Length: 374
Image 1 (cartoon, helix red, strand yellow):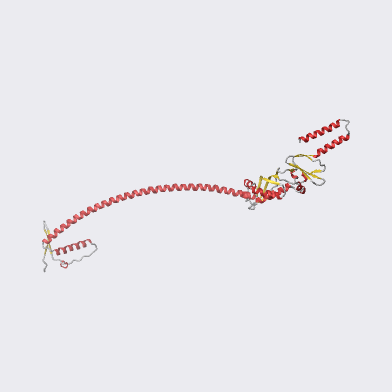
Image 2 (image 1 turned 90 degrees about the vertical axis):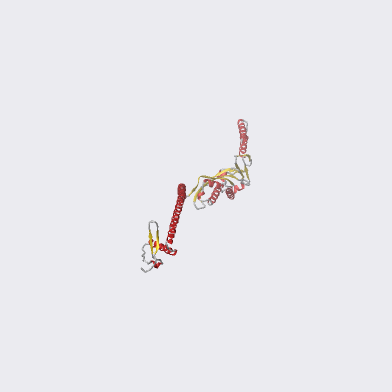
């Protein structure tokens, strides 16, 4: 650029010098101006990240000028205007590797669960290498329009695989910018002859607008779900408190049962000891009564033996004594019975003989009375 400016300054200086000399011919001055104009027209300056395209008016040959200053002295080379090419929206011919930003219009999409939505994304991309021949053949087309259409088609396909509840900014940003999805987008861009390669998909603010009715219904569901979750938390706390209360009550019951069991065991032990003491006392009393009865029976036996001896010594036979003792037993048995009628029977029917009972102050006894007619 500085070299071009220096050349222009030199040419202007030469022309000014020629005009200052009155002796210079007008033809020479005109020739110098024409040379200067031809020189200026043959010099092309290309800005960074741009290209300039020259087309020959004679044979249609093309020449592409990259960044920098170029000398093209062919007067039949006509520069192609970007406004009349497929790059018209960008107002320039971008060089390969140039980063461009494409912002398609919002498009209508549907999620995998048939919820309608409006999607609005933009695309950061780089320019792939393109040829001038394809540019000339595609003058009526528009790369920007084709790219926007392709991006919206790709976006529609991607959204049809995602449920509505997953259409969040983070999830969509991660999914749309995955290597696999970018590869599929670049393949579609290449097949549409856009000469663009996607680098990043940018979701615009409020870029995903789901159906208002579904959003309202989802909000209501979320509110009910949050209310249910809060109720579940309250119920869970109540359950925990109830469980703790039951545990406490069970511990109290177990403590009461343990105390009652211990008290019952003590009562049983004390009852056992009291019962054992009563049994021992009863056994002692029984032994004492038994000894008393034994002594009484021995005394009675001794008395009965003595009385039997006296009766036998008084003339009573042993058989008669046995019968008399048997009669005594029967008499005692009859005396102990109640509600029984008794009949008197003569003694001789029982095998007894009349006897007389003699009793004095010193002794008692029976005296045999012979049987005979009275």
